[in-house]
Length: 130
Image (cartoon, rainbow, N blue to C red):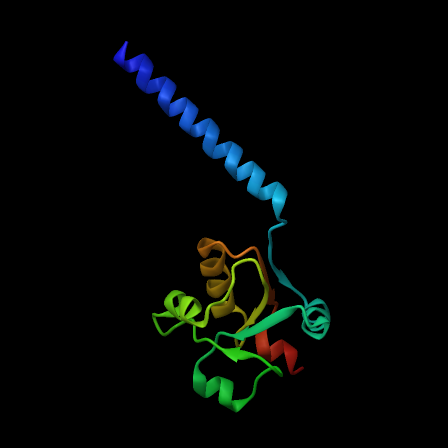
């Protein structure tokens, strides 16, 4: 009997969790993906996005996309720096690095943190300046 009660409680908990996640997915569209230079530029020009340069400060100072904020993904404090900046998980973000490796890491970290709309520049800043 105790095993049956435990099974029922686990089944109900699982059902509730799935229902909540399904509702969340229906309430907001989750868009987290890599995009080409043209789509990234269009999004940046729309004024709806905050652009994050996830390279080092030195790389940022050598050149960056206009209005981009520097937020180094490799400094070990990326997640806490996002929280310190007060970035809202429901807002729209663009991320890029030099060639695409670090921005992929940033994209995944932001996904894990619950951000719902993040676009990554395919090929990074290197692609942007070509």
